[in-house]
Image 1: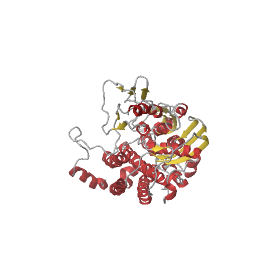
Image 2: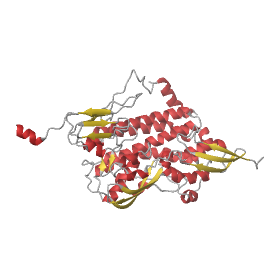
Image 3: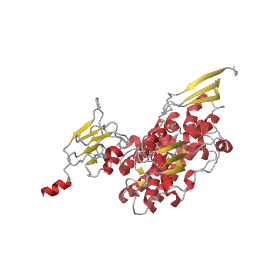
Image 4: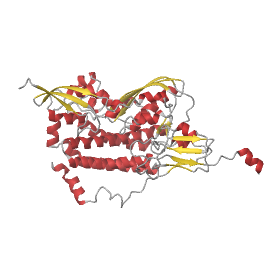
Length: 122
Length: 360
C-alpha cells in the first residue's frame, strides 16, 4: 500500500501532468501529420494521388481541372504526397477540427501548360 | 441451493470491457460453472477488402485491424508480401521496424496495466501508468507523425527514417520509462490487494495452454517458452533476446510476464539503437506478388499469423489473419469455470482482450 507513496507524493507536490489546453498548447512535432493541402497551380491533374489513395478520399477530373478531397475520409497516411509527380501536395501540422457539416474540399485549377508548347513559345 | 443455476450476461457493455464481447455466465450461487462466448458485434470484414484494394493499399487496411498493435499488423502484412516477392529489406529498415514494434509493445502493456489496475479500483496506478504511456505515445508521434496508427510500414521497407537525435531521445525515454516503472514495480507486484485478487485465480496449466493454442503472455505465464520473436523476423535476428516466462499459470503470473516484458522491450530498444546501421530505408517494389506465404509475428498480446495467397495480379486472392485474442479465447473459457463472479472482470483482463483484432 505504501509502495505508491513516493509517486503519489511527487504527483501531489509537483507540476500537473496535464496542460490547461485551450490556453496552453503543445507545439506540433516536426514530423506531425495534420491535414492534406494542395498548391492547385502546380497540379497537372494526372490522377496519381487518386489511384494510390488507400481510403479513396480523392477524386481528380482532368477535363474539368478539378481536384476534390473528402477530408473526413482521409486517413492522413501521406501516400499521395509521396506519389505526386509535381510535389504540389503537402501535409501541414494542424489537426483537423470538428465540424457540424462535412463538406468536400474542391479546388479548380488551370489546365497544365504543355512542355512542347512552352518550348515553341520561347 | 447449489443446484439452482442462473445465467448472467457479462457484456457486451461492461465497465471493464472497452470493446464488445458477450459471455453468458452460468452460475451456481456466486460460482461460475460454464461460460458461453458470443462474438461478432463489430465484425468489419477487413480480410475481404483484398478484393477491392491493391496489395500496397492493403498495408493501411491491415494496420487498422487493431489500433494498439497497428505497426505490428502492418509489419506482418508487409513481411508476408515481401516473402512472396523475395524482397530483401534494407538492414536499417529492419532495425526501424524493431524500434517501432517495441515502442508499441511498451505502450500496449502500459495501457493494459492501467486498465487492469482500474478493474480492481486502483485508480492511482491507472493514472500513473497512463501518464508514463503518454510519453511513449508522444515519441511515436515525434518519430512517425502520428500517435497510434503510425502508417510507416510499406512493402519493401519503411516510409520514414528516424534521425540520430531522435534515436538518442528514444534511449533517454527508455531510461526514463524504466526508472518510472521501477518506482511502481513494488506496488504492482507485491501489493496485498493485487495479490489477493490475482494469485491462484484463473489457473491454466502448461499442457492446457499449449493444447488450447494460447498465445503470448497467456502461454508464457503458464511456463511455455515460446515467443515468435525467437524466429528472428525483421531486426530481431541481430539482437539478443530471451522470452519472459513464468510457471504459475495464474492471473498474477500473466501480470508479471507483461510487466517484465516491458523491461525486455526497453532493453531491445537500446540494443537496436546501439546497433542500427546507416543506409537506405526501403527498396523499390516492382511487379505483383504470386504464391502463398505464412508469417508469424509476436504482438503485445501474443502471436499473430498472416496467411496470404496471391495470383500475380495487383489484388491478393486471399488473406487470413489469426489474431492472439482469438487464440486466447478457448484458454480464457477454460479458466472461467470454478471462479467467483467477482473475479470474471480480472480474468477477462489478464488475457488482454482486443475484440477489434478478434473480429477484424
